[in-house]
Length: 484
Image (tube, rainbow, N blue to C red; front, top):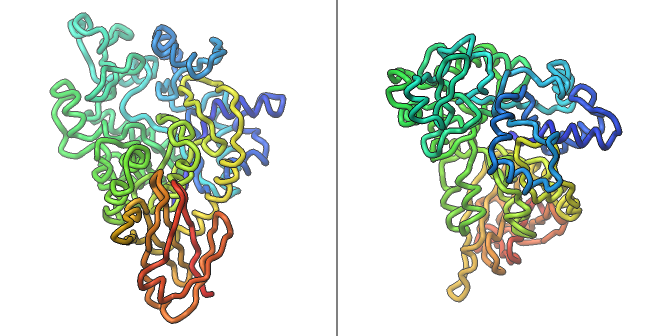
């Protein structure tokens, strides 16, 4: 199953330059560093932010006092050289020369492939930078405006090269000041999107599509109405994805998706979509809410991306302190679907860095947390094979703390695993009946892959009343179930 490691390419290469005392590009990253990135349990590396960033977008960002304040909050010793511009304000889908250019990216992809790891890159389907070539070469790809629009709503429109264009937006927030809106209903944009994605597929094994739901017919019509023209008979992604896959049949499509549109995007061709609902429930809600979410059909769950942080979310160490992060991490690591880990998460970084910046503050490494993730990732890789089942937990009339327990099993022939998480701040006890009737009448040994602790139990107990579990707050078991 897909396990993604997101790397902020610009920041990472800058830190490698400090580490090795020389300029480091994608083409000359030392082999031992690729070993660190392609760690056991990871099969896909997402190099975030490799495309050419927009000088015009950077100028707009530098005039935004609120944005500058967020930069200083994250990086108190901020200097002008630290502000590189947004990687989602793309001037051109060409690897930035400062990162090593297309040749450097090809070398990086080869290094990952030699380790059995895929390369994933970004695609921003909704908007481009105000200095993107399409504004002069393919203006039909964009949502146009009039001089009257610009005079009436200068925050929603901008003039470039004597033409007026709409600024990029989603239907729930004000327009983004530094980007120009693409027209998802236009044939010219759809064909240009196919060309762009085919070119990305020439350079990578997967693509993460930013805010993918904004291009869906219903959403785009709600945002732009008649200004975008008539609604096409075919939705955007069912038009684009098959045409890209005709050239790159194995290209992995991952959607950043919200608003409960994940299932629709899966049906429109995406392999995986962000599972923001699980994230919200793990961070803000109780075990019953998480369990209800995990009751969805398995085909849908296999198409989700589970995560505790990414570049858009707060750092897990800041929002889920101590054992709470560990418990939530065990859950996302051992559920069906894809898993996303964010660079710095394993070390316990707490500062969420704005993507505009090329440098981040120094933070101490949480060695205990780092060791935990070193155990968790290979353990999860061993666990997530075969058939997955959500399990019930039972308790006693005078003790209902079993409601705090989450449990599921994996089975693949004789390989059997059980995961139990106490998703609460209360010590919790319960029984977890195992749905493997052939365990009856024989002794069993359970080995925790995170601690190496072993437990000898009778198979009749495991399949009857169930495994007795007592877990401290936010603690968990990741157990191999074998013969005693």
